Image (cartoon, rainbow, N blue to C red; front, side, top):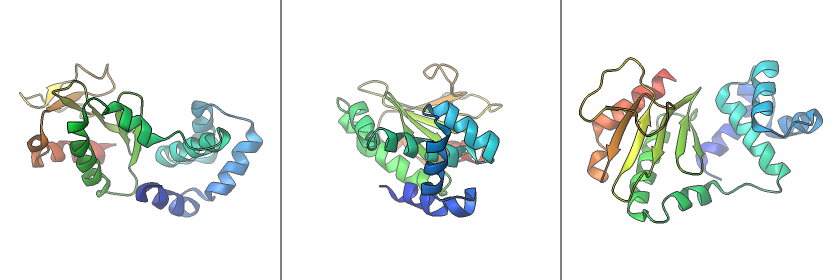
Length: 183
């Protein structure tokens, strides 16, 4: 279990009023199994923040399935033929996680979503030669580097292309942090 997830679990009683075990018991009694339904219940009826509701739902559904679907497997699959980008991804995520314990790293089939109260960024190894960082920075202007999103289908307002580790610089980290702080 990664340190960020363990911190969320440890903080759960204070931040949500119940431990993970108590949430799992409540959800077992609810009969709900779909992520969206569980999220709605936790947020609407129990006033749980998005980040904690997402974590509780994922962990509960993993328990129902007999164990965690390996998030690491999703990331490994994304970088299977683009392994040269994996150290860049790992370094970037490590730096972003240092900003706060309220960040959820949510691997999907083709990208990784970064969530605070809402999704603030996406990391995707798009091609053999390029990673794309999607950012939610509505209202910000565009530059030759901070482009309009043409990759993430409306899930982000902006995109930054990364071709090697030198692209993970203070400017990019500043944009990601700005998106994080707005979420």
